[in-house]
Image 1 (cartoon, rainbow, N blue to C red):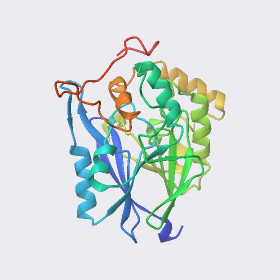
Image 2 (cartoon, helix red, strand yellow):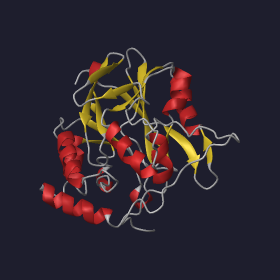
Image 3 (tube, rainbow, N blue to C red):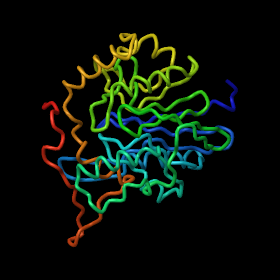
Image 4 (spheres, helix red, strand yellow):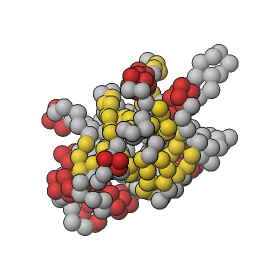
Length: 295
């Protein structure tokens, strides 16, 4: 792997959502991409803030970087996207996988959003499997990685892959596959595609839940995941993995922000428009996620 193919990767951990945001840098040109930025939201008070996004902008400014892309891997269920805020301040285009339209159509029905345009127009670019684009001189390849959601994608940048909700750190196993549109079988196949990358490929996950109270961590390699991932190493076949993953998912309550976040994130991270009194309101379907475990 030449130096030209090795991006600099900086992770920013958000403790409230256990999410990791990334700034991916081409060292030669100082172009960068921001991957999965978080808009702060307090579900108890309904307050929003831009502390996470501003931390990213401060880092970009202090390093003399130029934001070329604002990238998402799928519409997230555990935080709001800060993509619109960052686009307004950097002018960089936003992007996500083209199958986001499937997630939009699914959740449009759940939320009963009759006038919602489920066409992906909320982003500047929709990537298909195999598409390539550039961050400065770095070439980026897109892999379709469904299972956690219908629309999940992986970004492969030189020797780094941003795998988000497929595998976590090896001591934390894999992402759940029981959201509407999820599939443990498809997740298994997506994981196999990722594990087919060279063994030294750096893998950057989307969440870290700090098992045992350890410090946050987000970087592993393909070889490490093959050897030590608690789910991958335990399962030799798709059937074994599906049985393990589905049994685990039956015990998990839904993310606390899933109904808050999806209506925002299928809209590219845009908050609802203010009503006549100047306030914004979220909409909640009742009894829409049948069979979900309770805390």
